[in-house]
Image (cartoon, one colour):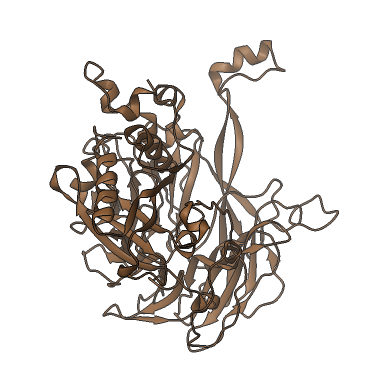
Length: 597
């Protein structure tokens, strides 16, 4: 065994995306993964199918060496068999592609900059642009000073809707400001959103609504209705608990609040935040999701009948966890991503599983009639790529944006299970070196803990900035526990953590370490632990409970829980709530909390 392996280094490489290398169709896996390889990984965060189902556009993110950061560009492909074509080439952060109804144009946002330009649209502020699906020079659709915030295209393609954020001054500070005009006070100055409509025939823009609130998402239906997620201001504390869904009817001057008073009362927590709004094909249904820390995401529909709206909570498939912000309609049928035992799949509101198998879906899209179905997903051997799926869920691969990975010696990835605290089954992802064999005996192991805690480590090939893939390439096993409180294992498993934070999860993780030692995989004398956010917090807890870990890295982990509770601006956050052991101060707190009291 090498000196490097014996001393258990933990390499934290913060690398991102770059262009891939063209390889033969079935290359031999000979390349030993290096830190620099991380820069070659491309991702596909957004995808949109043309209304007629003939083409697909996507956002491709790669590392731009000159800019020393990631950059996104638009790509398009004819689904009848054409080759992928790149549409944009500037480091302008393109995003949010939307098809015109005829499938000939693509609208998107970008922040283009030209030397010596200090006026829109080339002053580096975000505007709406349009480009032909055949390629060519982008056209600036908006030219707003300071740039736009959000946008959507009207269903008939004749107008662009967009929002701006402008300052607002609270009235209760007026007297103070009149006396001391040069000073700013607390939250006396906030933000609000204004909604505009730009006619693409006359090119005249009109403000439809000064909301008096902050719009965090909006969508335009084919019949002209506008649905908006709004909060009182931009402070996170108002997003968590005071966000709502408003609808502006065509020609109306005031919104209709379709999340009525008291709609949060059935929730486990009052501090949920609404993620998105999406319209059905008919324009008579809105879908949205609401997220919580520590509790399952819920999904809702607003249905119109006879000119009146009705809010209803939709049932969720048994045993899975809906991913907030992932909703989309297939015609009038709401679809979404959901976690299931470290897999992520596309489901319909009927409970139908649309993409079975060992995949980790990232996003999806449909043609207008719902017959062309696209998903971007990772597998056990590939980073995310685009697939077409049929009525039976069979996947047909459409792109290969990371061909270089075909020649990499990738980790052996498997699911492992053990008995957690209280006897419940806990699961995790185990990564072993590509050439590891059981007869090799115990090897060093690093426990990589996910954040959240309302999240999960996915069952996929993942070259992550924090442990996965690179450590196995150095001969080190990686265990990523989906401890109690993780998504994808049912509501009870998720909510079991409530009131037992930094207790039951710590025990679950340590039980997983014991299981890997007993299996002869992990060397008990060469163990490390690491995590970010809640993973960093749990790392802090673990190293106070035991000294078995020879190395630890706590990324953004809370070190003073009482101080965190006092200053946190997210009331629904676990890191913003005093854990049960501190609340129950008459009894002994776990060791992982005693030092922080």
